[in-house]
Image (cartoon, rainbow, N blue to C red; front, side, top):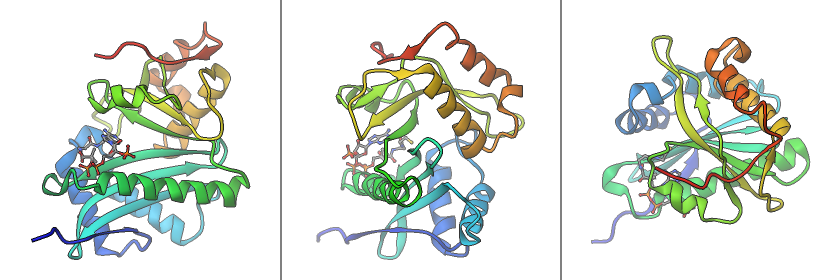
Length: 230
Ligand SMILES: CC(C)(COP(=O)(O)OP(=O)(O)OC[C@H]1O[C@@H](n2cnc3c(N)ncnc32)[C@H](O)[C@@H]1OP(=O)(O)O)[C@@H](O)C(=O)NCCC(=O)NCCS
């Protein structure tokens, strides 16, 4: 019997039961140190409903099968740098390899593109994401000419008070023009925006990991492609 069709849609109502179902998948897929709190998702939807998000737009896209959530993609459009930042992508084990991941990602990209048109009044410049250095997908991603897997040590801020910042690899997918390098000036602004506006760190420069990350860029004018992978 063919598998039931997948339905892809955005969750906009904070009371939509799909929100908690999606968070349950997130909890099964990522350990505590890697995931934001459910409260953060609810706050983002509440702000969106109140139209308080100005040029920051958070999205939660779900894949449903027979009315049950089987996958999710989350991400944030950042108007000040005209970039979409992929947050999480997760599909239930039993549903993987059926295209849900691709469709969720594509839907998120379409939302970012619409945000850019509406807010920045121009095409979306790029998509950014944090990936673990050991993720096998990273190598395939790095082979794509439009993707810069950036050659510097990126840190995601700690997500809980009792936690540590996490080392990740940051990639930049160029959408409007092919780029081989990002000027450090532009990258610093992107990093500050991610910490300040996505993770809501009130004073990034007071955080040791943020300062250390910026220090590694002090002697550089630009950052190019990372060549070596673990
Ligand atoms: C990654 C995952 C979501 C793929 O879902 P899937 O439905 O099995 O796979 P599909 O065949 O539909 O999709 C593959 C798509 O996911 C992308 N993908 C694969 N691994 C990825 C990763 N680690 N991060 C982001 N995208 C990834 C592929 O590039 C492909 O997208 P494309 O067609 O636009 O190139 C799924 O394996 C999963 O939940 N893994 C565990 C969680 C995880 O590693 N998430 C990504 C890091 S946030």
